[in-house]
Amino acid sequence: MTTSEIATVLAWHDALNERDFETLLNLSSDDIEIGDASGAAQGLAALRDWAQNAPTSVTVGDLYVHDGVVVAEQTLGDGTSQATAFRVVHDHVTSAFRHDDLASALAATDLTEDDLDA
Image (cartoon, rainbow, N blue to C red):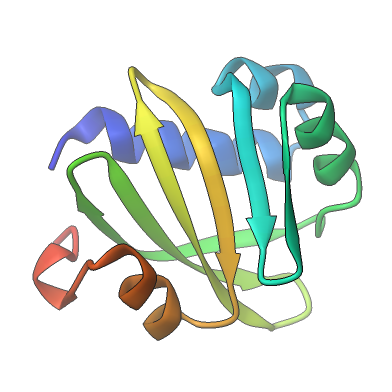
């Protein structure tokens, strides 16, 4: 576990919540991949398009981290729960993949309860 991976993911969420797209892009790699079960897109332009339509409030819950992968449990402004799996390399998010629930995000990344950032 590294503090910088967690800090990067938390800063990414802060930028998203504040609608600070410039900071969000600066925290992301040029070839970032974003997606969910319905598909994926790549690049900073795709991230900006996605972020402009993203929920206006995402509260981060528990964080799980191992070898550059961070899974963030999230609650949206409407009370909906989800989880997103992030890959962080050199303090930049290189991928963000949304899952409908924490269990599926952990399963997809091979993370377990042992990886919970306590």
